[in-house]
Image (tube, rainbow, N blue to C red; front, side, top):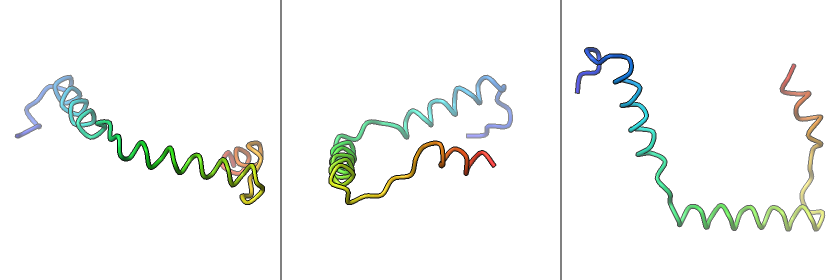
Length: 63
């Protein structure tokens, strides 16, 4: 498909369709991330994971 002759709005619609096709729900991946999140929360609550205050993180990246 040639995209050069497309009008800007048509290009945007095409981009939107492509992005939607890439972001389909994946139940298996959702389960993996949910398990990872639970493990991280548990590690944090047990003191096995260090944390950095949000203010410090934002300060570092706003420089």
